[in-house]
Length: 545
Image (cartoon, rainbow, N blue to C red; front, side):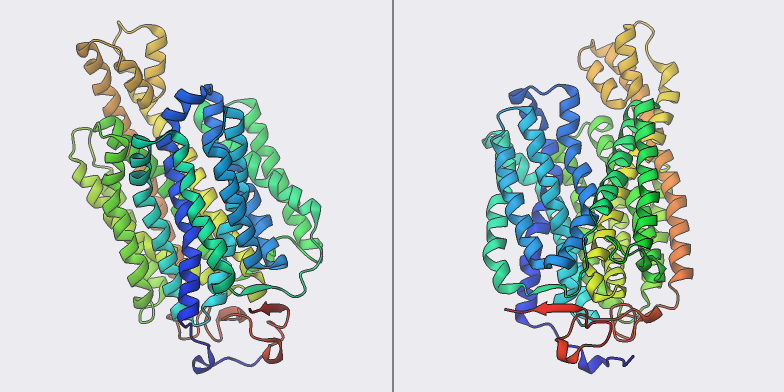
């Protein structure tokens, strides 16, 4: 196979960078949508009157559906066109947001959130795949992924702020209307700025694989969340078993059919498999630690939701700085060094979190989160470049869906597994500290969670409330310490894995994944017109306006 020299790689121009700005629109609104619902939940609960089970479905159904459809829709974009799927998803996201905003009852809102999940599953894989198509130069591509990550983080910063302002001045449904002008803007500028890419020989879509992919993710995520929330029970255990069985059958079928929904051979590429495992582990730790940090700020230190969001904002800013600067550094320093150093830095920060106490200043967590966020940015920005740059061009959507799944599933797994560990520590420590004169039902609620203890304390006399909250806050902080300790060990292991497994990956732009002559025969760059196509890229059809 002939190699492509650096001088022959097309450079992104004004249209490509404007295209990246267009791709930032759905990224931004998806990030905002993650947080604003948490702020709107009290208001919509007062208006629609959902029971506790319906409230959980309103919160969780979006993530369940998004996780279940990401693989299918990411691969579908390779088949029907990535721009087409992106625009279809944007239109669907806008309509579903409108349905949520004016939902007359809880059932309609749950339906709207489910439709948002389907639409969201089409947005992120298409966005990631189109970035690889727009930016063929590995240095520019790394910078583009950094800016993409920065956009997502920016949405996480200002989402709670915008949501808080809207909720103070309008009804709860107004937070869903944020998506309408942004998705409308994407529908207008997308066809002008984004070229269409699809696999010219996609093969037949296998319906059974689609069913198995849904049965693989949805029951597992449901089961994990229920086990974390309510403890061991037959139904969630069976759900997890069903999901794992479906995953086994899905894997067997993908290896046997000629046109797999998910090309498992991608995992044979060391850069892809190592990065996906590392991103999964990082998301697990991040999901668990952020959950306990947010609860610590609000329920131990007494901050409001918006104040807690502001406390997290410096860390988000640090992440944006890392996303935009480290790709440049990666042209001189090997990605394995940058990423493994970042993971080691996170491990050190989390070791520091094990020393946080209930009476500690919030400054320790705020500053620690700044360092943690900056240290995690190499894995997010450079990791995306490694995964999508190492995948064959016609499989970019599939690779993007796997990267997105690592993040989505890791976050869910983190809040569930690490949350279970942290609350197990809380319950064991607080059990002997509940005031004896507290009614049995109230004592059980307080023993279950720090949120339960806070709710019970709000209706007690001041002296009794203080006697309850003091031990509860100490117990919860011990749970935070434990979660941080587990995360520190896991991140140290990831640092070693990256340093050893990816040590031969060169600097960006010197022949590594996504560049000319990448390792393990991974084709670099993006599709070329058919007249100039290599055997590997001949399958990919590029349609330009």
